[in-house]
Length: 276
Image (tube, rainbow, N blue to C red; front, side):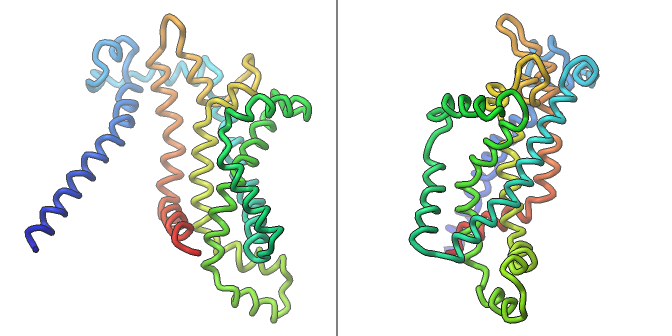
């Protein structure tokens, strides 16, 4: 029995190491390529750089629209996350704490939005953005990101709310706290792990999004980092040094935020998946 347990544990470690190598290899490849010349990347893509080539970063920030695109991506990510954290938990709280046929129907309606691929409603969505005057500016993608995250957000928050005892709210109500006060002073702080999960998951989606900014924002102005990186990919030639330098810069903020929130992120996802 003990021998079987050692073998199974060893197999798990081996599988874990293999999976870690598979997932870390793209990051390794992107990092070493960011400090190479374009010719060196083409000659031997997997080798370490002979010297740290930094001219790609200098050109990226001094001669291109990448800094402005970086600000645009940061604005969209933080603004979308702020709106999601303010609006979606309130909707989930109203649905979970006031369960009836109408709120259940609304809950199902939100979940149905998760099942429709973006490509299905892409064309009418852009026509609607034009009618509303949201086409060609950052407000368009922002509202689309917010609307697109409602289904998953409501699912995550309602699952998490089922694990928060109602007795806490009832005690606060007896003490004279209003419904709004109960939500913001008691319930919302308890949603911290779930909120961290929302920020990480949806923030990554907004930061790394390529299709929406490419189609909505004007091509003659700075767009977002992914679109600006794509501009270095040409039909007949590609500046791989610029592509990997831009990719390396785009990874750093995401990595920092994830490392800072990973404890809350894992707790929030695990709680949302098991409660209720």
